[in-house]
Length: 483
Ligand SMILES: [Zn+2]
Image (cartoon, rainbow, N blue to C red; front, side):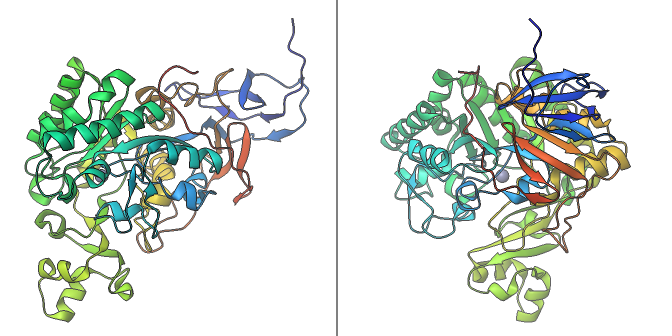
């Protein structure tokens, strides 16, 4: 029987890059309800609205594989830093940090990166997901539970390995999170609250991943001199649990390690042949996190992104402030706590090699609560499409799109996302391939991207004519086949 029901709208005359890493094709996209109903020549079809997108690309909405948006989703439901660059789904709970399950008036750094005061109030993961569903954001969320959050919930002293009783308690919380809809567990053994966790502790806490089909994501113990043992620990955790592993924001930190991505990518490629391993990266030579007394991080240029005791230092260079105060920047770090910073610590050659590695997904690692954030929060996806794909020719546009859509949906098990195919969810980003660019810079970090025409989430427009439409169609996404 011919399909004669009118479409809600047709995006007409664009080039569809469908998220499968194949070249774009000229086609119309018809949307009905929350789904893509047809892709092809729809010139004669009935539609309530016909949007001329000729000259533009219609792509799956971008999936930000690495975010710290747990609390931002509840507090700033428009999610402008994300929708303005074409992101329609965010993966939360990264680096061992999740907003739940933890009730705490003043959580330790780096958990405070998510806090806006009183934000840690969900003692069960289910309560957090219920809050997201009750007051949805403009984008979808796939949520992980953080191991450092579990430690803070269970352990009176974080600066030691967990006892067997504490491991049991953390595992019970991880089980509750997975049963209520978390897609995985993340760790951040790089950070003080989890630095003393043993590999065995992590394996035992993460046991529920195996029974619930979850994913394990990690900000590894070391991204500098000792990155190889850190990779081996990551692979071992994945093997012992028999679960997929995601290496978060893969990088080589510190000048002595510049160029070593040839070595790490070879190790990752070898591990991929034996087990399920993936990785993501952001397209910048600078990282950002809590202000940390770490010789590798502090060795290069450091810019303060926020500072509780001295808010006037936001945006200042740590070197300058240290000189003014007659101190080494290493000693100054203690005085400025709690605080956050941007660290110029990577090599452009490594960044390009890691981005070009076919299995690398794109994740922003943006810190949405920072006063003067790293520009990755507003610019990651257009920077990959514009600067790295179009301008530098690192990879074709369809590969860039795939790295932020189809690949990510497959790795995180987000059914019906990351593609433009009939039957898929209508998460769509329309952009101008000639104009797309990251406008956010280290000097002006919250500039909106250029070249994003419109963005749709579950069929509903969220971004049109450079503005939020006022709709909040975001959903909590699960992992695995569609229910
Ligand atoms: Zn991290």
